[in-house]
Length: 389
Image 1 (cartoon, one colour):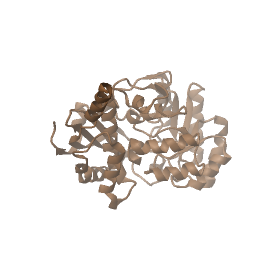
Image 2 (cartoon, rainbow, N blue to C red):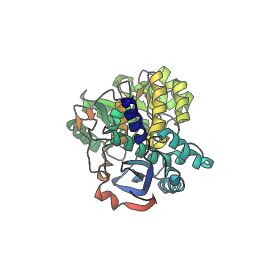
Image 3 (cartoon, rainbow, N blue to C red):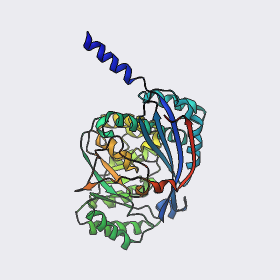
Image 4 (tube, helix red, strand yellow):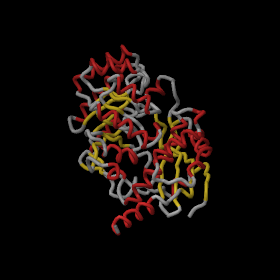
């Protein structure tokens, strides 16, 4: 009886905490050089010069804390921040353990703007902060809290293969990436002149020389016939995948490519809800599913996509934000990939370690990240809610 009383007492204490304080920060990270992919060369977008981040910091009355973030490229950052300001107050006084309940509460607080896109991307910062808090309180890396299958994840590099870089620079980046222990090299394709893409692929493939995996990314720039032609020409290169060959919402077109090509098809990064990923999964449109936790509404929603993808035995390669996705990929049943980008390094005090083609899951509790002093110089707006304990 005494044992039962003690257990009940511990349970009651564990659920007595509540969210007391929230801080939102809008931070714009400048890039060293403007970045261009096929969307720029086809006139659909301008070069990328900065990335907008929405950070949420949450503290409870018992002194537990968590940090999370969402982001946007080219447009949407100020909108994410403003929407987060509108809904943040609904978390005050709530039990931080109830992450699923709180996701729904945040969603309903802004229901008139929908359940995808900017609306859920604002929620993502809160959701990720709550998962970070929960893992820190448990004294575990987030991957361990979720139930890790591995302590490291295959990693590939994208940031050295943009179309804004001449081929000589890309080849130098290949050498630097392999020397740094990165296990895969992804380059951008999708130029108006497909022959230019073919020359670029051939040059990089030759330089890699079997020392690392190779992927290509067309950023949605082809129509169905062009994607099929390019895919067939790529078969001899034994690519790990062809990414976003078609419009992100062309479920049938991706399904046809996945069925007819030997090279695996990867897509999903531009989708902004669980439902949009369900369409890809149910229609056998991908071999590698590429959800982005900040874009789909956070870790709570990302895990729903993973459960569906695992049931279909799909491979996982989350997009961007390796600081978050390393943990989530480590908890996926099938061997995944994580995308290495060093762009975010100036925002954080910590660095992720790479060895033998794999990124090591940090042993620090939670996500294992803290904001750097430098990040504060890029802050454009800040709001606080509640009272800090």
